[in-house]
Image (tube, rainbow over all chains, first blue to last red; front, side, top):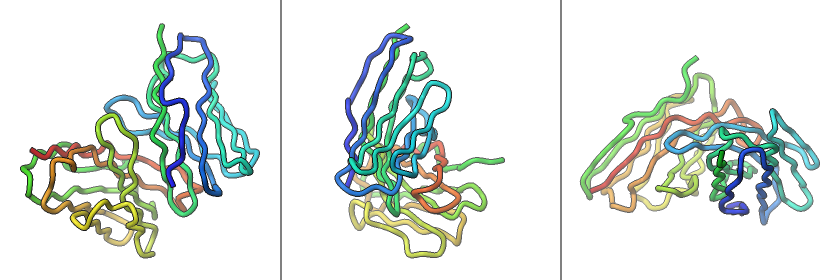
Length: 107
Length: 115
């Protein structure tokens, strides 16, 4: 089953924060987050392997609530370079991606 | 080192023709995936190869689609009797181990246009 992402799209001003949510109807082994810029291939952001795990680099972090079968991606003090489409992927034996959240950062 | 490569980068074909898309994964990566991405849409899972196990073909949309992988190297995705709805970017990704625990490295994609 495909995970559900929300919101579908976000417009922010540079420096503002954003949260992107990902939920699944089935038990999750792990959650993956990728970002794709227009016309480019998706690039890896992070994997969360355990319930309760939180990770981050730079000002992008994520959490994984295994019991609720949810993950959230947090973008703090957004930069213009954060613009793109964010995909969560939920995995058991293979990775299924959500439909994506379009993030647009205005200067 | 070299990343995932795909060829051709662009393919224009006429409705009803067969096409073959190629993916060269990163050397040593046991897992290989094919995804389809229609314009402005998400990543649609097609097929997954893991080592020598039988591939997971559960995402292939019809029997016109098939894929092969030679050992842990090159993969080809074949679309027979192409239709206009097959127009999309076809992305290949590889990873060094089990799907759930490892980063996927994506190739640049093949843009397929069916006229």
